[in-house]
Length: 417
Ligand code: UD1
Image (cartoon, rainbow, N blue to C red; front, side, top):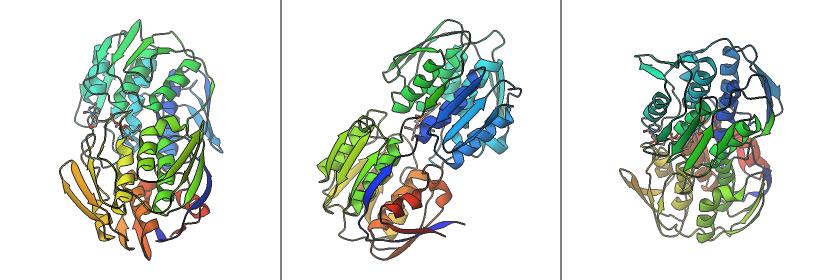
């Protein structure tokens, strides 16, 4: 099993071009299914989840592949509407194929998705919305069978919670539906705006993405296009946090700072100097982190749940006590045991964690249990005194392209074994 060997205490310094956003590229690649023809998607991060999505497209009969970050998908020969457990079990976001396949083919059989261990991740909101659009959904023991014998039709759908995945699935399904769909209490994440940008470039008629109300006027057909995926805001935050926790400085290119304002503001409040312009963020830390004001995760534009484990590690070395409340996923504190092993003082009660910063963490052998928790452990190891081993890095590499190589280029002592 691969692991990172890290010797902490090196100040990180330098520039980095940020990868394309994982949470954009997966739905955008799935959305190519809606297009009869060829699309080329640029800035695709080289991640295992991207490769798996390409494999799913190939299984469906599409021609899909590419190199150096550009993936071309030709759906002309799409012939299959079934996704087996062997594919969906590896990646929760495989559920984003549900809406596009149903819209394009009129039926789909899909095994229940797997993925990160963040606690129960139901798909009831996806199914409820599709039913409102006229889909017949059978939830069977092993798989879902959905069909829309008379084509999907537009509907007014109010999501009880702004789920990112449900918003994506319903937006994609609505693009080829008959008539107009209005999605109320839609998710407002930047990745939703990116997906809508791609679909509109293909000829879809989507308005309001990025706000709580999205309107989609169904069209008969989409045509192929070229599209560049946005920069990854969580990866950007991770490298910034690496500079903060090591008292370093870094320039990040390729991520829109407006997409991570909440995190940037908190980093400023805790003592880092930050400047930003379009697509560029500069951060300088003096090695002293002040405790954060209370952090509570919420749908965008609130503090992102994916950022919590990063800030948990920063708080572990801050001066004073920081308080966290996780409102989205049950198992978000997966890095806590590892951090404690490194000397962090964390008390948790349910959704709330209190972190009393310590002067110095010490190296330890720890294990990543999910993507962002794993990144949090790497951050802590970069700041810790002495060597650490981070195991379970297959979780981390689902979301970070060339993670250890990038950190090493910034001056970290890290190697992959
Ligand atoms: C996406 C992101 C993930 C991020 C999350 C929240 C991708 C590939 N993943 O995940 O990195 O952490 O948004 O920003 O884009 N829920 C239901 N029923 C549903 C759907 C969701 O109860 O049908 C609940 C979930 O259990 C969870 C909450 O809603 O508690 C948020 O889920 P959702 O916004 O759907 O997240 P994902 O799309 O899975």
